[in-house]
Image (cartoon, rainbow, N blue to C red):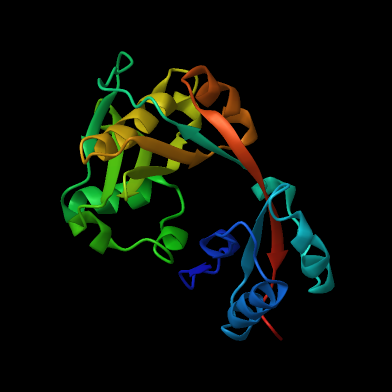
Amino acid sequence: MVAATGSPLALFNEVLPVEDDVDAAALIGAVEAVRVAGLSFLVQLRERVDDGLLPVVHDLGLEEDADFSWPAMILTDLPTALALPEGLRIVRVAEQADFEEFVRSSGRPDLYATWLSQTVVDDPAWALFLGYEGSAPVARSMSFHADGVVGVYNVGTAEAARRRGYGWAMTLAAIMAGASAGCTLATLQSSAMAVSIYEAHGFRPLYRYRAFRGRARR
């Protein structure tokens, strides 16, 4: 599978197997497609599941990037109530002004604009959230649901507002958007520093993705 936005950020142009047994030629063809398109990209292989493809990515000249080698985690007992830490207010993005603030809150609105479009606000499968302290946005999250599964993405908290439980609250809001649409399973990929937090709230690792970085054909 190729999931490419055209962003200059490799994270948003990915090649990833979705079946248990992927033909090497299919992977080579997918990598060739993103290279010809002029994109920086990541190939994400599931540890153990896709180990047979490791010689292929090495032959393709791709280098492993530990910074993006994250565990995939699942939650099967979805929460039914949103508990907010003191001082945090969560708002679902519904208007253009909210979306613009969501993008600004990232600190890199120029890069966000390369992979995230305001059209997601009008798509009921997507949910974007901003967390506020007073009038200041300090946290964000987003989710997408389909086929009974809600995926959580882009959870972030401003450095000055960390260690207050905001990250989990934003994750919870994203999960519950899917739960309200009938989802029974939540998924996410966690950075190394957040794994213990998610495990404490019932997430369990399914497998780890190994990321291999590639560049456009010169």
